[in-house]
Image 1 (cartoon, rainbow, N blue to C red):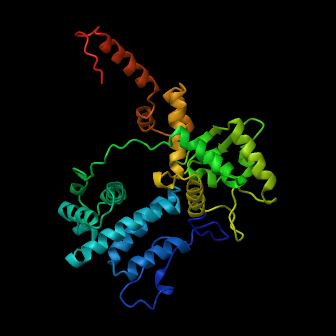
Image 2 (cartoon, rainbow, N blue to C red):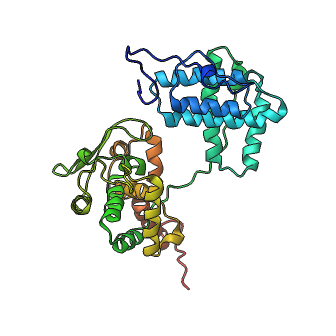
Length: 356
């Protein structure tokens, strides 16, 4: 059980939450008195009540949050479901649809159109839908709503875009422009390990083994599975240089300012943007995640098998890894020019090479 999500008494029993004794100033809204609560979850339920969302919805979400907590789901995951149901119910409120039992498939379709009119990306809308269907699935099992809502699920068609890797010349230009030990280590570790930025920012010094040239990721930021990634010589040297120049006594390899334990994502992103500006690459729109894409495409170009890359990237589904195969053009490039040479020689359907 994730102790960050629950309150525990000295006798190790869960504390049952009683919203009425803490929020009696609310005349029309009170919280369910059935499940335990911690301050974070209590806050989100209180916001739902303050938004005027019906008590029955709050009761259902309270039970759903308890279910998630018992499954050891992170608070960040719970917040995603909270955001989805909150936005949906606020959209339906002017339509006088106050209970989840009243939601129809047409209502859900109208909600999608509303999100599209709000200029949200298809990926963002699909995230809302995915989270809502998880909530609806739970409520269906609880016999709260009809299973009809789960049939023929909505999902927006996504553009099948290529992962954006950084051009090799731009990589050299970027590395050459970085003259600070921290940023140099940050960029090289991401480039040589393929770690997600969230995983790197959560890395502690004890997780790094320079003698064996590896980093242990206890729990991946997306699928919560641990894995090992390996360090190149230049990444090892960059880490050593940064550790020598960094402040002693820190747990995380990249620590924050103002007594923050670790560097925040927003600050890491800002540092990377500053580096791209120094390298005159800002206009190309590269992001920190592009370093992960570059890592994957370069390893495939070097001949690494897709199954090995899948493990290094921490993908559960190899089809996700297979996207990078479309980026690796060395083999296709050779095959293309070999075939074109045959065509131009006239060995296929006669000679028709054109000259300017």
